[in-house]
View 1 (tube, rainbow, N blue to C red):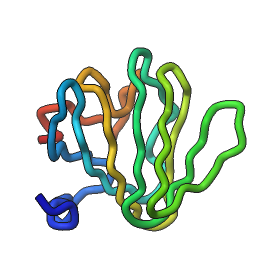
View 2: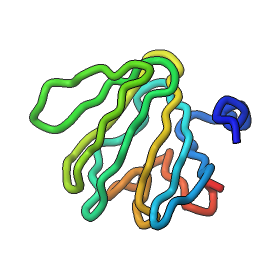
View 3: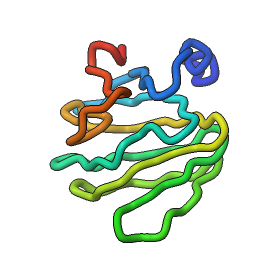
View 4: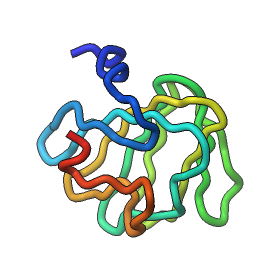
Length: 118
């Protein structure tokens, strides 16, 4: 599989696409632009972010925001309240437990069911 070819099939921002499974985790690709991801956490799951293109502003509750750029990786531990945004188009790979909802404990306009991520 070619990640760039998979990214071309994603037309909408904030719409993760499952591209594979490894044991009990999904590998997802997503494009974001703007600030629609709500503050949220994952009660029982860690979440891995890997920036493929662009830059990502990462906010963690009670900490200063930081910017990730192409090639950067960050793991959010379970229970940590966080949100992400990007001024320009940003492409991400996410690795999440199959049980994780991509907007965690919050249902918002961008929340997609697992079936809508395939």
